[in-house]
Image 1 (tube, rainbow, N blue to C red):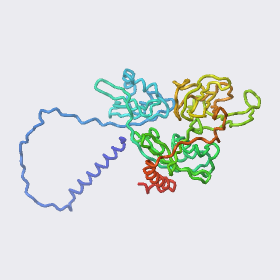
Image 2: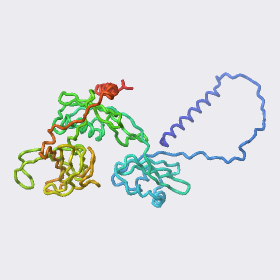
Image 3: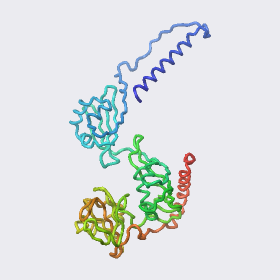
Image 4: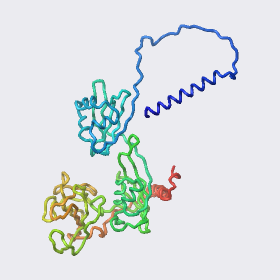
Length: 427
């Protein structure tokens, strides 16, 4: 709490004691006259020779978000730390250089500072490691710095929203993280084309996990259940962990929603050029078939495998530029072109799973701007990735269906309450 808070508490306490004193000496107070006798007694002193332990110093917890243009010096100044002395010590502390190297706008650090402005501890999130932090602590011989797992707790949140313009616009307005919006697109992507099928007035409800640490959200978990009403048709999904230790999303009747392929190789993007038998090529300046779909994406956007498979080719190939070709089970293959780079380990023969990041978008080859070119082939014949019927996964067996339906009934009830705004009934 702030010093101002404790000052107010102290002032209130003094006022209370003053009132008590005034009440005790009031002329109207009734007192009984009793005899009084002073008694003096020697008391043993068992702790006379013991060392007196000082009370622990008061520590103040400070939280500060890194701002654009911040340096370690300006940041420490805002948390009211003796900056120059502390910086000098930190620069001599092994592993503390991570703090200086990874200052990035938006990060939030948590520090404990004593009443004299001495930094006692600091927790700093690490780049690219959502569950790891840098912990700096003051010891008898100076600071110690080490990385450690971030202690998190799982919370469940329920939200509903209505589509006005786009999925991400609706989730932003409802305070739903982008990661949950992307999961929604993946879960229902086999039934809803989120690039073309969304309608104004479509609505959805979602129940999802949030990982929190020290009262702050550090990342989202998985969606537990969701309902999406698209053009008047309702789709529902419930997460269910099967007996083999795996899990997936199922419709209330136990039918698997997992398709053998994701509809899109990007988490979410816009289609800049669709599948066509005749398209004017912006580089070649001629009309030719466009046997794939182009997704607009900044250079470096993660490209994921749309299905389980084996890398057939990873390298440079004609107008595709840097390209990855995956061979999938049976008759299927997929192509990812105009890439900027490959993920380490992506080479012919490497196995990948659906959703794995395999490369990064770019504009290599015959590309007029940064984007990803994606092709879907069956028996070597190009198909429109946005409309082709995707093969599905088997439904739940009878031995698991009963347990699933109990879970699904509870989750659907919760989704209904979330969609009607009756969340208090869930308490």
